[in-house]
Length: 116
Image 1 (cartoon, rainbow, N blue to C red):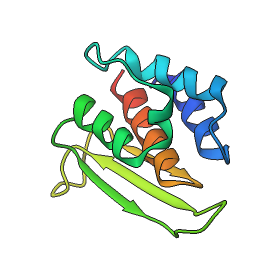
Image 2 (cartoon, helix red, strand yellow):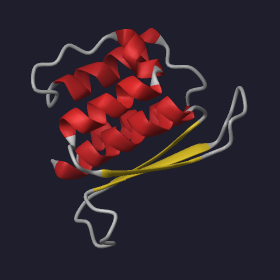
Image 3 (cartoon, rainbow, N blue to C red):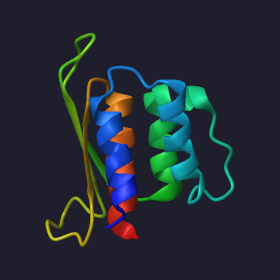
Image 4 (cartoon, rainbow, N blue to C red):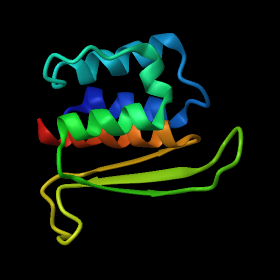
């Protein structure tokens, strides 16, 4: 497991807003596996854009989302799994956050951390 990616995911989970420095570190971590796709800073705050990154990096994986739509802290939880039909994935990502994009991003970073 990659401790640096796990720590970065935990920082994303605990931030109410993704400041530029934190977002840029997440972009750098994801860019190494994003098949040459340029990732823009504003993508880190977009549910659709983070889902597109998940599709690019982990195509076919199941995404589960649950939360409360409330500002500033919605208490979202997202799970990325290789398959929804199995419960013995060798690695998966579970992320939490105040917004849905934060939780999705944290889950992706954790899935990457376990894959290495």
